[in-house]
Amino acid sequence: MADREIQVRGSSVVAGLLEPVTTGEFLGSYWLQRHVWCRGAADRFSSLLSWPILNRILEHHSREPHRFRLARQGHDLDAGAYTDEGPFGRKIRAGAVTEQLRCGATLSFDAIDEVHEPLTRLAESFEAFFRGGTKINIYAGWRARHGLDLHRDNQEIFIAQLDGRKRWLLYGFTADGLDRTGLREHSLPPAGAEFDEILTPGDLLYIPRGCYHLAVPMNEPTLHLTIGVKNPRESDLLQWLVDRYRANGAGERDLPCLAPSADRIRYSDQFRTMLLDALDADLVAQYLAETGSNCKPRPVFNLPWSATAEVLPPGRSYLLRLTAPASLHIKADASAVLLQHSGRAYRFPRGVTAILDRLADGTSKPIGDLLDTLAERFDEETVRLLVALLVKHDLIVLTPDDNGRA
Image 1 (tube, rainbow, N blue to C red):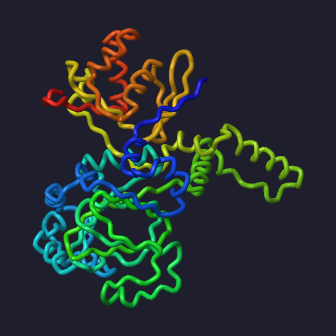
Image 2 (image 1 turned 90 degrees about the vertical axis):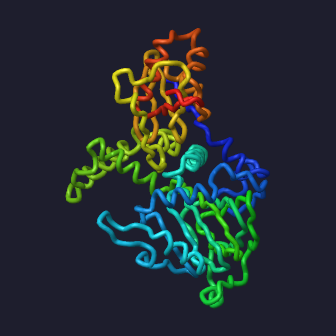
Image 3 (image 1 turned 45 degrees about the vertical axis):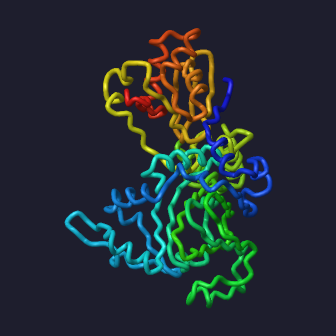
């Protein structure tokens, strides 16, 4: 069977955020190694989030207090100070939250990529490019008091400054010898930072995992995104191997501890053979193909049509978009293709690869364009059938066109 891989978006989005640093330069000189500061035009993040949109998000998710976090000078505020217990569980009190922010607290909202589509698309682009699970949080501050204490994260971090200014200090991979006395009492950062700069709207700062850092507002409204990428690690690879062998019935047999030496050696040879059987030379690529990495599962709904017998709406104007957050791994033979995506395997007619190729950039395209492009190879009924198969397995999203036609 011929193997191939379809890269699904990501690279162009990440490249735009990293400018003027190229993606090649970033991967070769900074990724997993050291920080980099990318200056940008003040409005380059304006399409991602604004204060009015943030207000609406906070209002509509006030019954999800687990997403809210208020912190001041390194300490989380007690949730009882800004939530009420009611008949339907806890609910955020807007006035109490605002008062705490006025007094110097920093607001964070967890996993905002799950509730705001532009940030969902951004997180998916990061997952497609870096092949690691991505989560986006929002942070807002007003006073010159730090929210979170000096700390290091267990993932790769990208800071996108949306509005206002914020001072960022990076201290490298050890905090030994840093005097935090002034930080605890007066939000005065410790001396010795290797990076001490003020980020303004349009700036992007990459902080590698394990690097100690601190952010301090500038006594003005400030808003930034934290894009966290959890790069797969060797422990993930080992767990995949364990799960793989357990799925084949291995792992439950007793070890021949009391058997003669010759039997133990025979068992050991057989076990080694089993371990190596069906493993590719490129273990990393095989792990990514079979597991989908550690990317966040994102549900897909195509109602009402996906629940009908037809699956697809009539007409040629509605839009199609591939949902895959990372590469699609395809093995093809004369009759079918085996597609691996997000840890699942699908068997499709070979014709689906023509559709996947045309949607691989992640943009939405009218089904009419697809029908016209593939007209020389397939009739309309065949294309619609193949698209319907992909929709049934949540690999394609259906959206109305610009005129709202489904």
